[in-house]
Image (cartoon, rainbow, N blue to C red; front, side, top):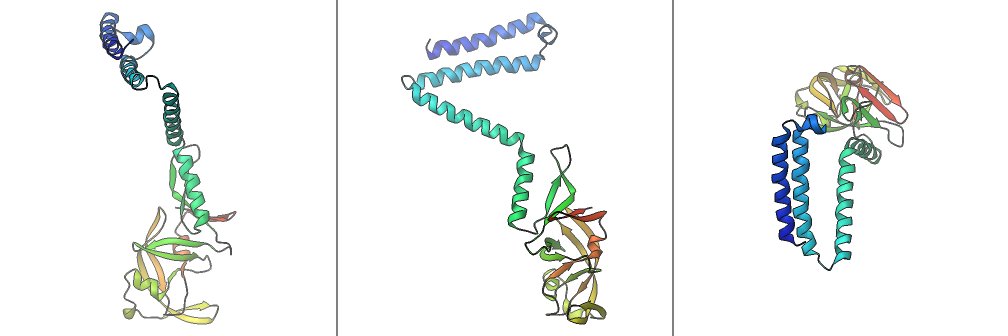
Length: 241
């Protein structure tokens, strides 16, 4: 059967199907298939016949090549279908791997029994030393911080404070704080926004350290205490909005 014959056969199938639809009146009641689904099935079959006949003519005498390419295309289609079907699992696994490779990266945890991530729950993977370095944003600017439950407030280094838009030259350092090196003084401010992943807290009380008094900014209790809960689970810090 040549290509033209198969094309005419496909056209005939569409015409006959249309006539059958009109005579049946209600194909869903007769066949148990919705009329839209039946129409898709018939049109899809006709399209496959046309495409198949075209491919058959193109690969005439090259059966092994046609088989190899068919296997490649089927494998690619199967890979895409499986990837799409398990996209949520792959995304979660990818974020978990990225969190292990780059500790401090916020990972949005998946909601139980769903394909959705819970934007109100974020996990932070600990560094090898056990401390939790957190990739946060302060006033829209990226700031690397250390989660510290012993700090009553968020504390920014002088360098980070200037990066997030605070004019440190206008600050008054009158708030005493105790450090490993003794007592020093900081300046009280209120940050517009502090975010860790999808968790965002507005108007966060914070302290600004004097130059050279603090090496890394601290994510203290003025942020952590505003959450509904936070806990250490294995090697992860779980934050819940």
